[in-house]
Image: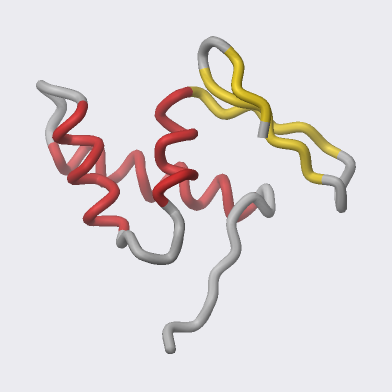
Length: 80
């Protein structure tokens, strides 16, 4: 990961590709650490971004996670 002014660049050596994440997507990506649920990620973002409805943030978190999965920047693991 390489931080830049308005987000970060992630390099995928397997696919030899670079991905740009804006600040919000970067926050979601960092919180996808196996200890946070979609609901807790959305709540943390809701607490940070005043004035945005929680349901809107939840939808955005799901969309962002889906895109990160599609781009192989996240992986799913079975719960123990």
